[in-house]
Amino acid sequence: MKPFLEYFRCPEECAPFVVPPSIQKDEGYFKFGSDTICFGRASEVLCSKDPHQDLEDVAPNIRIGGSLCRLPFDPAKVVDDVRNERYVNGYHKSVTTPGFRRSARRVYSYLRPFVPLSVRRHLQRAHVRGWKEIGFPDWPVDCTVDKIFEKLLMLSLRTLQFQAIPFIWFWPEGYSSCAIMTHDVETAVGRDFCSQLMTIDDLHGIKSAFQIVPEERYQVSAAFLAEIRNRGFEINVHDLNHDGNLFDDREQYLRRVARINEYGRQFEASGFRSGVLYRKPEWYEALEFSYDMSIPNVAHLEAQRGGCCTVMPFFIGKILELPLTTTQDYALFHLLGDYSLELWMRQIRMITQRHGLVSCIAHPDYLMEKRARRSYESLLDFMVYIRSAENLWLTLPSEVNRWWRQRAAMQLVRQGGTWHIEGPGKENARIAWATLDGDRLVYSLDNQPSNSVPTKARSGTAV
Ligand SMILES: [Zn+2]
Image 1 (cartoon, rainbow, N blue to C red):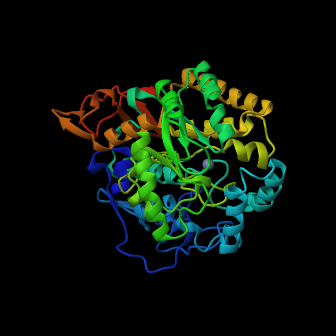
Image 2 (tube, rainbow, N blue to C red):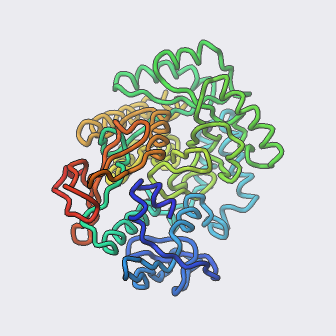
Image 3 (cartoon, rainbow, N blue to C red):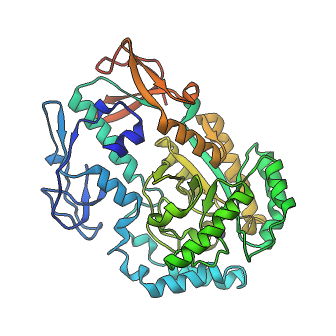
């Protein structure tokens, strides 16, 4: 139950789950309650290869009794498979064949700086055709992982018959949710626009992160890096040369990663993002970075499809993944032809509803055009509005990384009938309480009930 405990940081006794030892069945899709599609193995139901089918639900086979909750599947395994996009094997066959990958790569990365935008747009639109028919993950934001954990917490409340379960709140200072703005610098033209982009961000009171390609694409001068740093913005490494071949071959990957790690030290960067969001999480252990930002939540419009299906950070070995949870500016403007704020607003609302991490990519290369810049500025206005209206933590990726690691090391301990948080950074952490309101899970902050877990929570501040 480690992933569940890591997600909520609740006491171990609040995970009363028993899972089947091993399930000798084929993997596939099944339902966990009416609104959540899972991928993996489950006993007692038939798992389907096609998420569009009428899927069988494991919920009626969950058995609660004797302070234990027996599940017909292993949620830790399902979450691990979904976060690491293992459902993509044997799925979307038509779009993940080597031929597709090769041509998509050419179109998405190699050609990008040299071919006129109109040609690229045309080719890429052809590649994403059919994206609306993809049955899993959910568009425009997928919360499969988050929904699984929420359902488990509800089951825990019912099994243990506790009025409230304490956990370490997701964000510091009781912030309701979190947001980061990131800029991938693709070409020399984009590089030369960074200064102006920092001014635009500053006018909105937002500091953002710039991902820099260290080789081949453009010159990276010390003065360029110093300006970003001195103005309080963040520098991360963006691929090595952005040719789209980083994960092609293991030996080549390791050679490139050695150089990428060296640039990380040179740039004093603790974060990484691959070119074109190509990814292979099982190779991440070679990256000497504290966090990665290459895995989209739902990747229907990306060259490599899939998605990690969560709006929360999570660990891949020692690296913290900060998933990309909104549609990139390029895809929105040039593949969907949409300059309105509608999709972004919808995504942000869906993420903040679950108290998740809103993360955005806007490229300086594409924001020089007036119409695109107007859309981007409206996005910033909207984020600033949410910041004050809903207590959103608008911050830098490195700060999210720092906080999430601190939270992961904290413990909830009971002393004299009350709960306390122990560990470095505890002064910024808050205890939250999960309660049931009928069929709904409700979180409240602080306002600790008078004693231990199995007591009634006082009405707290709804978040
Ligand atoms: Zn890029």
